Image 1 (tube, one colour):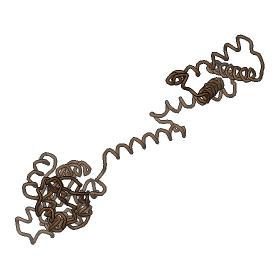
Image 2 (image 1 turned 180 degrees about the vertical axis):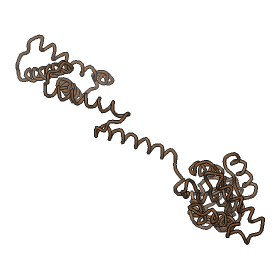
Image 3 (image 1 turned 30 degrees about the horizontal axis):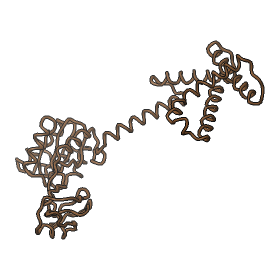
Image 4 (image 1 turned 45 degrees about the horizontal axis):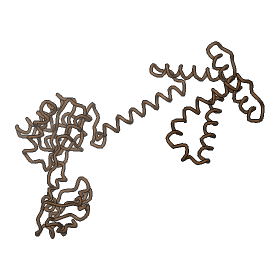
Length: 341
């Protein structure tokens, strides 16, 4: 027998061996805190974990013996076995185990001397209590209670205990009467050993929605970086080629390079610019031939028609001269914008 257990009674040696077997037969072993969990709740948790994880209750000294005998990195779990500890064995990963244990927790009333896990807030509003000593009891713990309409009412929302503060006897009694159950009762994972690594709750408490959102944002940013930096990958090569084609086409049009694929765009751009010049010339007193005037009128009519429905919403007689002037100016600017592309 190993040096650590040669002096132990037989039943303790068997406990140590059972712990060692559990660790060897599972990919994950965790240390959980059992403090304050009623026996009925423990049985409920065991039922919920059946088929997924197994809880082994043992003395901290025996857990220490087993971990030290196994040695290596798993022995670091000894640093987390404090208070009323137990071991949990599973083949799940630590993140799934943490989430599963969180789901097994239930709310219970606070006991005097316990620490508030979060701010305990009493909301304002009516209660089911009839006038009586309850009013004074609530007021003694700082809860602004009064009698209204034959019932006890909380006049304003009040934080009676802040997170991390100890709950005293009077506050605990008042919370019980109000039906407030602030305590999370269940197995608290203190640490998990998985693939030669110790995972603590601060690493495992992940908001899955935020995490998924961050992954999506990272993927979008990586995609954009790949496209803009011209780093082709299987997912971005199509976007990179498409961007290059568009940029090449734009350069060809701007530089008036007469290639088969863009000559129509160049001609169209030249025509729009010609019509814009023609309109500007007309504004300075030059007369346009019938064909040019018709083309220029058609070019400006399309954008003007697009804003016509909005103008029809208001009766013509109710429009001021200033509004009419603004509409005409906006239509003219839209037409020029279309001409210049």
